[in-house]
Length: 629
Image (cartoon, rainbow, N blue to C red; front, side, top):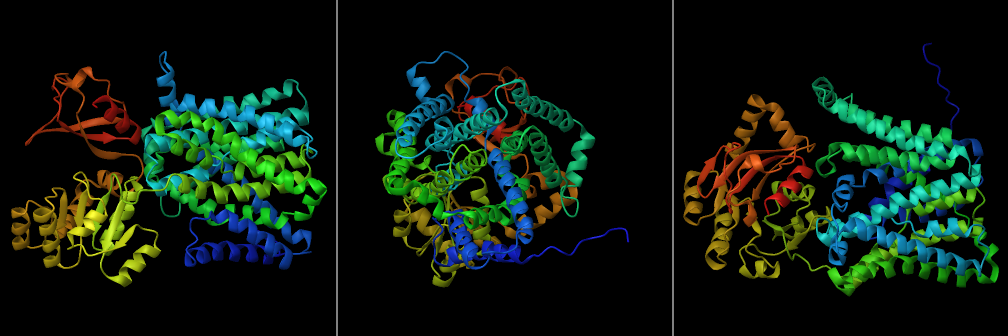
């Protein structure tokens, strides 16, 4: 035999955990409890099956599950690093002397301020709590309290349509800074406590050096055409070279950190994710979807279910009569250390939004559990404190989003959005694709069964009649919102377009027209239309004639956008293109001036009102938008 495989492993514990991981999201969707983070239910369910299904199970059979749980733990830290938008942090660095108003508008500086004040308040809180129960290391306990959870904050803001607003970006960056600095601080603290303060601490610096070397090596490889071609050719089907490369990066940093010390593995996995984040255009990345599928589809649920299985509520008894007082004050402290410094946002966003943001960044999950687990192993906290921290993680994750939505309720369907009339499969696909671009979309559907089906998929949908003008009033339709009419009845499409154009005088209307007669009617209504048969033919034509461009822009979601950017800045008027510092990853393809189109050259002058057709990365497009506005 070429390969000998042992069949002595017992898969029953993994079967129970796998079944639970599959069942929980299904049940939560059925009872419409989607606002509760799934991981909370996984921890609670893990505690239940640990007591009633796996109690007393032989240790050897649990080893495979414990290994997969540890892998899930590392995967969670790796994906936490991936969530950090490094470009956003770098772009927020102050480049000139700023005043107080400039300080408030700079998300990086405000994030550092909030972290610093949170750390100070956490230290004071830890000292006060140590007077109630035994806290073996007050400094480490304070570090545990300053953690936060980007993984909870991002979905809440995305669901609210706030992810690209200044408010949302401020919250995300504050959470990201708290993630990065808290991981660094409690890793260094744990290492120093275990190994002592001597030359071995320089091993931690070696991780930073390796990080920089890998970043430089990655940039060098990306400039090699052969490497880029191989990555593209091997990215799909059986090879999945990008997934393998991502896992290789994660394992390299985990193994290197493991040689330094077990308590450093967390930092290593995080740095691996952070490195990949610097190369990945996350807004459209299929690789991120695949990694999320691996992590949240298998490894990470095992970790959280195992947290529940290993949770020992009897450890809380060590706190004796101080238990309830400690838990209450601990919870108040966890919210206080985040809410108070967040009030600095009051001048920008108002008191309510500032306080709501403080409660949202008070949510804690993976990092607080990680820091607690390391502290328990090193003897820095007691089993009772560890059990209290797990309990607080569950409570803050449950209540922080609820309090945020209560203080700052969402104004439904207000602001920038696309209204899609008709719940066809094309409409559902369009809504999902717009969501990938962080654009809000709401479907109007008059068939009850189809409305319920779309709603069950988590897509914004209203049960209304698209022919009724009052529907658009309730949806707060504004002049800059697009309305896409996609019912399956051509005549009904025309009737809806008439309501929008004649009754509401709305200009941004798009629908389909597969017949010349319908196209003429729509043209008279001044409605923009497309021929779906022609669109399909054009797509096939592009796949034959220009396949690379087609796959890059339409299929891959992987690096580049084509975007129309309007020149609005008065200082741009009369400037030549060669005099403007365009981002190196963006290319100006066409200029539309009124009804004329121009191929741009270095000597071409720009005017206010010009529409620039730009091709490039999200970062480049963002900088070009700022440049011409």
